[in-house]
Length: 285
Ligand SMILES: Nc1ncnc2c1ncn2[C@@H]1O[C@H](COP(=O)(O)OP(=O)(O)OP(=O)(O)O)[C@@H](O)[C@H]1O
Ligand SMILES: [Mg+2]
Image 1 (cartoon, rainbow, N blue to C red):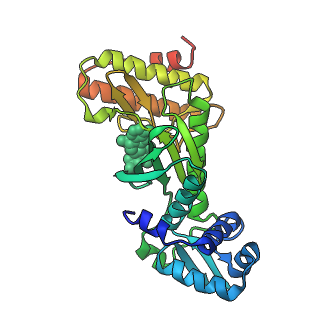
Image 2: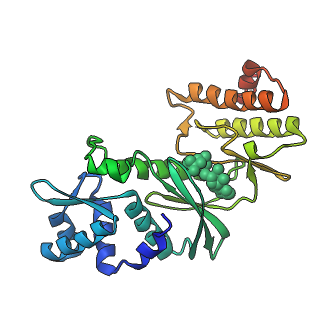
Image 3: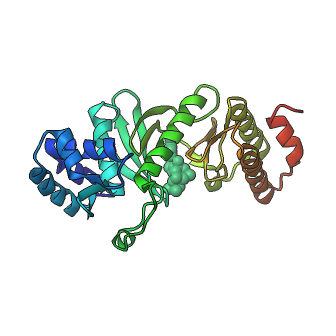
């Protein structure tokens, strides 16, 4: 991923049109056929095939011959495409360094003219390693690109709904698999030794309550997805979030709360009753 900017610079307008065409058609085709791309870009199929060869060599697309030649995004390719769109709409002006790389995302620092320091999170759901791509693993009709874009969209939608109601990073933009939020100058809960654990635990539970009353359950809450500094707490990382009406919502909520309570008990010997806390969060107390 270090070479994201380099890949980005290597794209011309024709490539950009091809990437747009793959994105527009990926909901219908696991591998978007050359003829569909040619039609959308108003170019001959031979030219598209040549360009796809180049993009495949750059590991931006994965090309596959069935009855026809088709192309899909690699994780890198989808990220470059999303980056291009973010820059085009002026959501970010410069991509900075990698802040972190996990199984399901790569997170970068970036600059935005309007918001200053921001964070760009490139989602990655189900993307096999290059080796596994070569083994032609079949993910069924739902290509991982679709799953990945859906994950980014879900995170952005949750942040949009929560911002202003609960303490979450300000959502700035969403394109493809990239979600941009305003940078928060705080550390993950698990990294810091806090001096007032009781207050911090109460603040976190209050945030869970506010999110719930706004109709959202986080679904992946833990000491890794809570940021803290001397000003307060922020909840981050929302791709798994569900609506409170979702059949899984109650189970997820209880798991979220339990993760937080267990962490404070283990780390700070602070004990709270799960049932009472659940009643408080659901406003049943
Ligand atoms: N708005 C933000 N402000 C400051 N730091 C952020 C912000 N968003 C994300 N981060 C940092 O990036 C890390 C990863 O982000 P996030 O938790 O959303 O993704 P993730 O899928 O858990 O990624 P990973 O698997 O790499 O941990 C966070 O733990 C946090 O350190
Ligand atoms: Mg996380």
